[in-house]
Amino acid sequence: MTKTSRLHLSRRGFVKQCALGSAAVLTAPAIATAAKTETKLPILGEGEHRYEANHNWAQLPSKFSWQTTQDVAIDFNGYVYIIHQGRLDKSDHHTIFVFDPDGKYVRSFGKEFAGGGHGLEIRREGSDEFLYVAAYHQKRSFAKLTTYGEVVWRKYAPMESRVYALGEDVQPRNDNPWGRDRFLPTNFAFCPSGGFYLADGYGAFRIHRYDAAARWLSSFGKPSDQSKADGTFKLPHGITIENCGREPTVIVADRENARLQWFTLEGEHVQTLNGFILPANVDVRRNMLLVPDLAGRVTLLDRQNKIIAQLGDDTQRIGADSNFAIRADESKWQSGKFVHPHDACFDDDGNIYVVEWVERGRISKLRRLS
Image 1 (cartoon, helix red, strand yellow):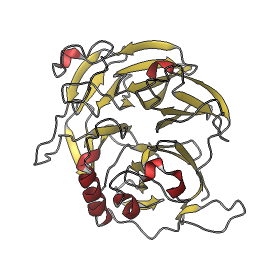
Image 2 (cartoon, helix red, strand yellow):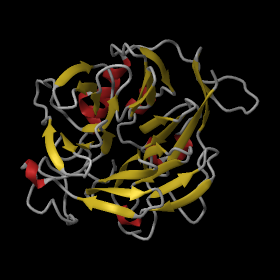
Image 3 (cartoon, helix red, strand yellow):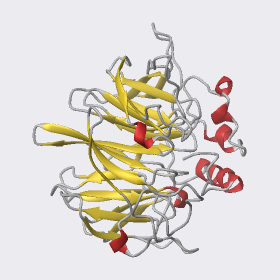
């Protein structure tokens, strides 16, 4: 998501969403945002869900610079992969950076996504792991890569879905890309059978289903009208599979409808959870859901979808920032508070990595204390 590209969220709408979210049905217990520790890093959460927040965790080499950080994924060895958007006029600049668990730079790649880097997931296939990359804006496509950056395949809009404009199935032209007939994918979720789901968050507002060979099967959802009916979307930005002791379901972060929606693997609507502000994505670990909210907080929910904690909550201040000025002014970023959480995920130890939609980049490691 970029400020310079045409946002599908008006500034007035952003303020309204934040105001509504502050009084939403999802209410959290009081959260301690800071405490005295030997490291003097802020402590987020309370009780069994306390985290030490390091906002300067990622050690990016000086030869590189962030251009709006977007998503995060973790491989089997605990290496952390970060994708940022990159800039079209810096086509030799990498878009995917790899760090060890201490934040030390390991390697980088992904020049081909400069100007459109967005979604990132990792999947283990046999004895190997692969990156799945969703590129939007000026690089409207999705791809499978090795963890060292070699491209296995790269694909464009599924024209067989019959919702896209002529030319969206090839390398996109660089004119105005926005519209419901354009292909602007945002994120992936992996099906237990070996296929995957791809959210077209900024384009057709649909979820596409692919088989294990990356062949399009079907899609579900359509743009919401004023009724915001279940099963419709207004920017289905994030997606994951929930498969914890029950029938697997697809969870979609329906961002501008301020809700999560659950679907069967075939795309039938199951349930809706309202009360968010701008939910950007969702991750699952054991009995918890993790929801980064673009309006300035990260929410943890239990298996009954009740709030456990809202970490780094700064929704009132972020909601008052109608010009999105804070995302470009690092001097106004506060320790222990989030600006625009765009993605977040758990590692195997229950630590949380949060990537924010800010111009100079911000990647926080929340080290689990409890």
